[in-house]
Length: 398
Image 1 (cartoon, rainbow, N blue to C red):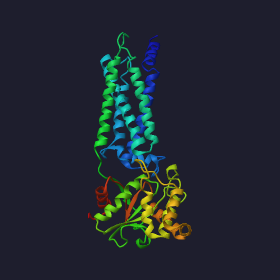
Image 2 (cartoon, rainbow, N blue to C red; image 1 turned 90 degrees about the vertical axis):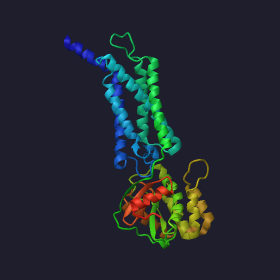
Image 3 (cartoon, rainbow, N blue to C red; image 1 turned 180 degrees about the vertical axis):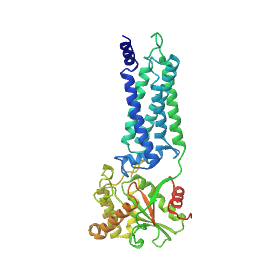
Image 4 (cartoon, helix red, strand yellow; image 1 turned 45 degrees about the horizontal axis):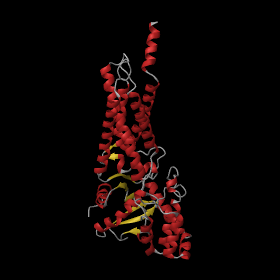
């Protein structure tokens, strides 16, 4: 009889909703810990190759607060706190401790729900891309918050006469959590992070590119010639592209950038682990750009600028193959463009660029290569890019 009573009490202390809480917390904690590990080590997340929408989100300024504290790390702390509190929700726990545990759970649930909404807004309207891991974490967090808030007002003390947390205070504690999420959003919005980058050393000592026979920003006779690996469908490349001219100007002609397309598509780049829809036709766009240079070198700068320019709206959208072909024919003439597309130099230059990309560790772009060193920069302005060139590639400051 005593054994039966104990078993009944154990089942009563762990009803379905407590198992649900534990499962959701564990899943969200595992996802957040995995994203934190990615942020701290720089290792590529499974299924999120360089340039993918997932990589775009995880490498954006919104993945951290001020470029220092990863938001996934904050999530790990929140879910760990919920995990600890969840073990004090049952009737076997004294009433004061139960009340404290439920109040903590409500505050954390509000913070998690508010953060999930904020980061959906960030991905939809600020980054313009979605990370499956992030969205899975946010959806799990919203389900968890809903379960916590719905159960909080249904729990009674041990003699079933009083609610552990009454309805109005329960929503008040959840609202406190939403306010905490608002503080996080304000901090991310207000604190512009310093320029950040990932750097390393190439397998080969130098990039085998003849500056006098390659598309460039700057003079081929510059003292410092940096190779830039890019993709015409890469938003980070687009942002960096418009800093290059200003940086060259600051260096007074001593610096130049050789432009080397490294499409993130396996059609022409074997170093890409898998194809993603965002970079479909990247190889074709790269060949069109190189064909413009081969047909009429002085027209390349206008074509290159056009490829990375906003057509309309607040966000840049990559050009289609059809639009790029039409622009190329407009600049160099249809016959000259077709002749250049068949020129073996286009394929040789593209494959040489791809080889440099592989030697520089593949992964995310844009990449800047100088001598045996490479860097994947993330900068908000020319000052940040100059700092990265100095710190990672060893270039002097202008």
